[in-house]
Length: 449
Image (cartoon, rainbow, N blue to C red; front, side, top):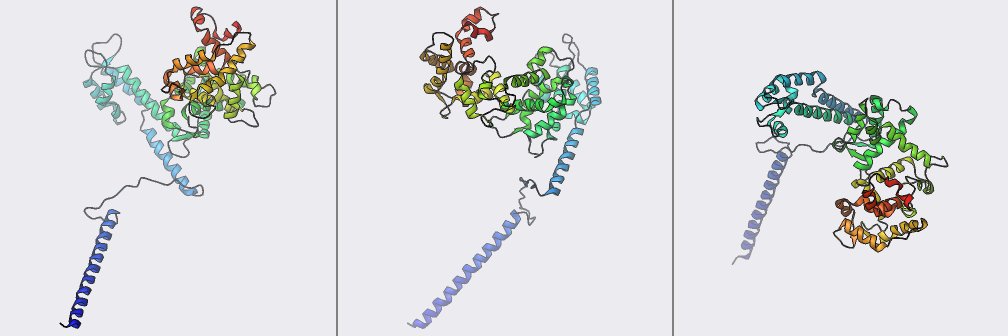
């Protein structure tokens, strides 16, 4: 055997294999490059895939030109959306068409319209009204009419409400500096400040009070709509809640006294809250100490609870400013609301465990027992009160109460009142007497002691 010839043949064969592998790698890289380029959109082949851009970076503070361009484009967009809405003349024309095409017979004194006439009006009303004249809208508004009609008035009110919501959303969006669909505290302050001259019910407010009024109004939005304290609220959430309706109710020049007193945004209500703050501020330094706050309401909040307020809430050198006071008032005046219960629950949760156990309940109720003794009454057993609280709340865990337990029980306001306010405790203890003497004022119960 010629070993030299065999070795030469082996080397020749190995070189062919290597060249074949190299060619395969080159072909593979060429194909990968081709398909990757097409996928990225660089080549418009028959199977190319274009992925639309879904992220647009916000301009930085120093990118003035980009910021200006973004602001102008948003303004143009909002103006275009505003022009798409029905104006007063078009709404009047819509009402005229609906009235002209009503479908007999009358349903009491209410004008009705059937689906056929509904479609006819939709064709005549114009392009702006097209979205309102759908089978879906008609189906929403149809009730128990034997002829399958809907109320013209109900439909027109529906259109008016939709137009108002779109107008308000556009108006709020003008103050959305970031253009992200939410308002910061300063944005909402600017909106309400510029809204004041359009509200006849606020005509009597002194301009020097405007800043306090705006602060009072804005706090309600942020207390209830920003529970995580992010410092911003979605515009959708503002439109979905009733607060804006209450605020714009002040356009009514003939608003009743009762409505004004129950409306947080009215001038009498704002002056009441601010007046209470000034009355509590005995040293006139513009802030409230714990001793000054202890006279809030009937003056029966326990010292232990007030300690927790000043421990957990934002203070300045141990004193509370007006904004923090507003959160305090909103929580205590709306104890049935989840946001208010969340505020109070955080104060009651002294161990920061996310639940109230027997120790927490006893910690706060001992202060109630001490106040009861001061009034010369026999203290109530904590064991009895603790059992009543757990019976009212019925928590998932028989040994502790969570915030969710309080909210779901619908008894959270009662439980909180029992633990933090002597007056609230006496009201609960004497509930049977109060029912029997319906005309008696619960605020005077502490006089019974």
